[in-house]
Image 1 (cartoon, rainbow, N blue to C red):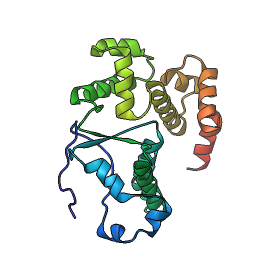
Image 2 (cartoon, one colour; image 1 turned 60 degrees about the horizontal axis):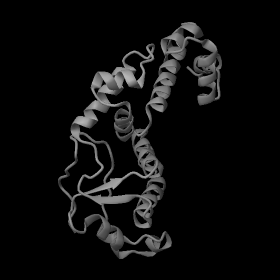
Image 3 (cartoon, rainbow, N blue to C red; image 1 turned 120 degrees about the vertical axis):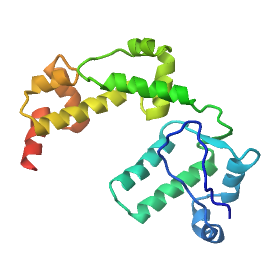
Amino acid sequence: MEPAHAFEYPVSSYSGIEIYITREVLENRELLSFFHIDIEQMLYACLSGSRTTVIVENGNLFKSTIHDILTLYEKKILDLSLLRLHTFYILRMLTAGVVEVRSGYEGALSKSQVNMAKKAERLLTSNLKNRETIASIAKDIGISATSLKNYFRAVYGQNISEYLKEKRIDKAKKLLAETNLSILDIANGVGFESQSKFTAMFHAALGLTPTEFRQYSHDNK
């Protein structure tokens, strides 16, 4: 009855999804009952008292589901059955108490804290050949290493080491597919002094050695 036309966030830039509960959903309760989804309970938890609420992440279950929906959208996979399953999952988690809903912005990052995380990301990824320590980045920004880790995970959904590993793998994949650089040069270019350590990391992530990935990429051009 009251779809939102404006939104307020603790910082100025977010990527995410909106879920509208339509009249048809409220009138047809069969599927909601099957999944034990109590819409009234969810709306009461989210909208009672202050209408400003924050859904607080408890682990990665909720965040991974949102990520999956966004991935479907980005890849233009408009499969309604998958979207419905993900939506039911989110609604069930909200009614089951798996995620916490708080009034106000308690626990949310401030704009300056988000900017600190983004500055750290730029410093860490601007030259993957250099293996900057978290302590040195935190010192440059003027915060503790623990605060930096917390801010970074809140903004990017991963800890710093996981995020950097993905960035190194992505860059290595691009260099393997698009250049004739040696495996050692590529290893050095993404921050590994040892070709063997780079190969082990690459194989653990993709199930292929760098040489096998390069051959696969060339064969499928």
